[in-house]
Amino acid sequence: MTTGLSYSTYVDQISTMAVVASSDVAFQAILPQMITYAENRMYRDINFMFTSTSLHGASFVLTPGNRNLNFSINLSTNTDPAQGTFVVSDQINLLTDASGNPSATTDPDTCVRVPLLPTTKEFLDAVYGSSLTANRGKPQYFVPFNETLFFLGPVPDQAYPVEVVGTYRPNSLGYLPAVTSATTGGNITFASAHGLANNSSVSLAGFTSSAWNGNFVASVTGTTTITIPTTAATATVIGTVASNASTTFISLYLPDVFIMASMIYISAYQRNFGRANDDPQMAVTYESQYQALLKSAVVEEARKQFQSSGWASQSPATVATPSRG
Image: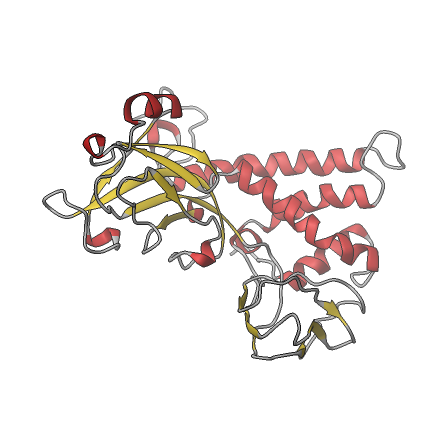
């Protein structure tokens, strides 16, 4: 069984391999971006099956006479239980009843899914660019305009619910204890700083505010406390500060690839990123190890999705040709 990594064991592993104290201020400062670098490389290199998601709900209902479909890419603001950022749209489904009319519910599993076809903005503008009442109808096509806006055509004649299917990027590995607090000023203090050095910065994930959209800075103010300073002038209610992911799919099931990707980044911290430095082969060696591990990870993920040789779930055969299927 794979020995996975939690945030704390990840930090210990990297600090040991990099030969630097985990409490080192400079090391602590680059930790968030090192995790981001490693995770982003893996999410872009591997088509993970677990990142598939379905977005639907009250905010995914079309407006008659308006071809725009707007939605937030922050999953915590949508109905999906996952936490992270929506990155790639694979499919948009119109949700109807058995007669083809707009469904009375936004639950796609109790509706008829009518897949829309992806097209170009030029085609949509030329053929379905009019929102006049006579030109409206049941949408058949969609085109992405930017990260949060899609155009549909024909322009909808009724309030059809839709489902957006795609992939998301989960929140990064990290840890912050869960706290629920309401305050009109003062500090929110966590019971433990989890070994972080004094005055180091802290990244908050899943932070939900009510009646407050101001900026905030969290910092380690003691050996056992993390504090979010607030004042009555800038905050009326602080909602929930939820736990960030102390483990992730990557840290649990692909710790070897995760560590190699992280060590490429740490090479820059150790001034060994280029040919003019003390050990120019350091980053190159970690990069080659990452690429070697990546190949097998990509194959395994393809097998899960029946996208291996011959659209099968088996490992590619090294001898048998042609592939069966």
